[in-house]
Structure formats: C-alpha cells, structure tokens
Length: 127
Image (cartoon, rainbow, N blue to C red):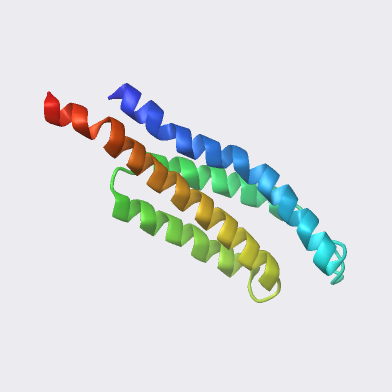
C-alpha cells in the first residue's frame, strides 16, 4: 500500500514542479502581448507567489482524497476561488491562472488514476 501511495504521488509532484516554469513562460508571453505587468497602472504584488502556494496546497489535498468525485469537486472549488479572486478586474490573469491550475491538476489526478489502474489493479485481482 505504501508503494501505491508513493507512486501515485509522482504525478502531483511533477505538475507542482512544472507550474513555476510554465508560470514564468506565461508571464513572458503576457509581457510580450500586453506590455509590462503594470501596464494597466496596477500591479498584483505577491499574487503569483500566493497562486503557487495555493496550487501546491490544493494538489496535496487532492492527492490525499481517495474518491475521484471529491477530487474533482475540490479542484472545481479551487478554480472557482481563483476566478472569484481575479474577476472582473484581471480577466486575462483569471483565465491564465484558472486554465493552468485546472489543466495541471486534472492531468495529475487522471495520470495517478491511470498509473493505479495499470500497475496495481492487476496485482489485487491476481492475489
């Protein structure tokens, strides 16, 4: 059982490691399209750090939730909270953080489910 949980943790660790470089790439793209980060006259301060921490915490929570429906509900709550935080003042940032957080978290959840089915379901049936 410990190996099963440890291997199931790998997709969540990978997406948490991918979040920062993807965020930096998104910031460069945003600067290229819209000018500077404060081109609208308002900076968002420590919000990117908050989003990284929130993403990591929510991935940890979804990892420890055993049922898929509850995981999807937890991620949906995360995405709704991100939208509430950014809209209506920062629609581009709301879209970017919601898409990046949602896609990466759902990818980790479904990769973990796939790994579990491929490697561990057969062993339980054979035993």
